[in-house]
Image 1 (cartoon, rainbow, N blue to C red):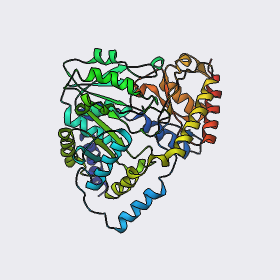
Image 2: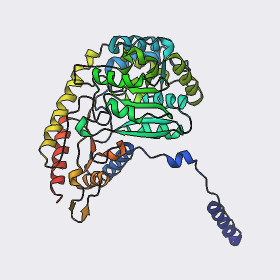
Image 3: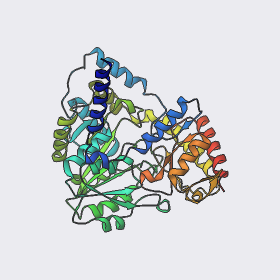
Image 4: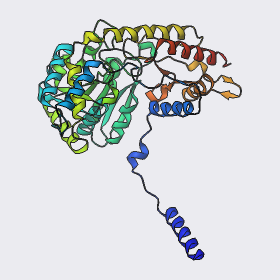
Length: 416
């Protein structure tokens, strides 16, 4: 009996060794999100009892406003618990249409709007609807980490257009024109930008539009998820310009300004052709987002953005705190981000320096050094397309930010 059991156990071990699941090429080509990876590492250290301050995730530390939660509760009472139309409830899309006109001077009819499970899915829907194998997609750098990976899933070819700190991380019309080839199908960028906080002015967007209009087959995704967290007086959307309106897809959502990251709801405004295509893609992947999230989102987009003024004021105050702290550190170069809740300092002067036998070769090693030495979790700029920088999220209390920046300063000053 023992011999038989021993044989069976070993047979299973042999079978396990033989069976190896072959994962897809598209998965193997995909990088893990650097922000999620750093957040995971910081959670692991916290679980070990280490006092880690995480400034890695782009998530507001505010709670969802009460009137939005009340709308969600009422939706449950009213039994909004069944499937919804794939592009979203009609009345929600009508509210988003009104919001686009009110806040952005953009006229999108209900049929031009598709509501999705977060702005990330909104972007993926557009890319999967338009990009073919080998099509080139222009991505100004620094960029949000998921843009490249979404393009790769669609078998497109990411083409990076670099913009450094000296230009406030914004590309020029000349750079755009020089990057366009016969294979160029799309461009994806954000304003206000994650990770830099840069905001394109109306004049700068008009100059880009002058290039875009010369290439009628070029589709541009303009990611405006940080729209309301904007410290400038000039707020503009690329789709405002009639001559490129049909070429532009405007992406937005409720995650950032309304502190609704967990509700997972984003949306697009686009030409009817693109909106219909995105609805078709979404119908086969996820259908519509949560019915309750949609009712909550309607309350958010119906609201006057003036209710956000205290939150925006708090973010602006935090920005100044972080910038002032960074300016006190020799070797750190900063610009002034005009929106979102990130600072993207150039820290390349620390590369090649060392402490206790640890040599800092690049931004990856610097962020790991700061995690281990300062117990502060940040994200390397290389993940966003700029190896000279790191991203600091100031979506945290002023007390937390003050302590974090003190730790960062002390750790950087040890590098010689």
